[in-house]
Amino acid sequence: MSINNFLVYSTLPFLISACFAESAHPTLEPATVTQTMHVTPTNTFTPLQTATQTPTDTPTPVPATVTQTMPVTPTDTATPLQTATQTPTDTLTPVPTDSVLRGEVTADRLACRYGPGWPYLYFFGLVKGNRMEIIGRLDDANWIYVQAIGGDKPCWVKTEFMDVGGDLLSVEPIYPEKMKLPVSPYYPASTVTNVIRYKHIVTVRWLDIPLRAGDEENEHMNHYIIEVWRCESGTIIFEPLATNYLEISFVDEPGCYENSRGRVFVQEKHGFAGPAEIPWPPYETP
Image (cartoon, rainbow, N blue to C red; front, side, top):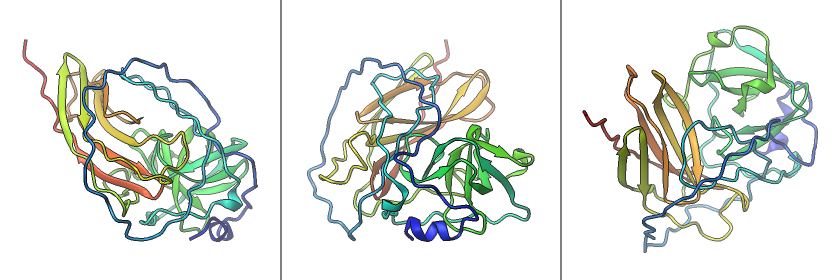
């Protein structure tokens, strides 16, 4: 469905603006990456269908508490709402609830994304005053799954830019068990080739899945999304990481009751290929 159709369902109009983005723009510290492999598959993938261009936006990086081995530059340019026509293959499905909580956008412009974090593809933009239904959340409620009141095109926004009219913890956590990312029909999943733990630092490497020309959302889109559920200070933390390289490192400590885990997605403008599950390295006993 086009963005124009989506706006029919909204009780307040979405304003046209030059850019849509989360309201904060912290900068991730660059680090030095040592890339130990770059394997390019030799097969050519045949598109199953034709897709139009994805709108672009200005993402806001969420400060990460992990140690990464590569620079990540989460900056985009924004595209007005009325030009947004591309939708990934799998439509995001609304989550039914008995009583729907509502919230109001407090940022002047707010990006609504296909996944719960700034690295994921941009879906469309919201403006200050937009009223939305809140139909899901992350476990920590830092990102919430919203749709226009009476609408059917939900997406993810950062909670701090919404004025929520009720108890957010009454909303069901839905990711990743009850909500899936749109699947790319054009590319296969990557393969995790190597996972190394050095004390509390885990480094993951995978095979390259090159994109064809034109399949990037824009020049700032990160090619790989690495979702990790990692242990820090006795708590499992969900964190989506992004890179254009073939490896990434992050902190994972002992002391959590749940097991850490992770997976790698290939991201392109039509959706997400994968995931490739990360075989988690155990802690070495001293």
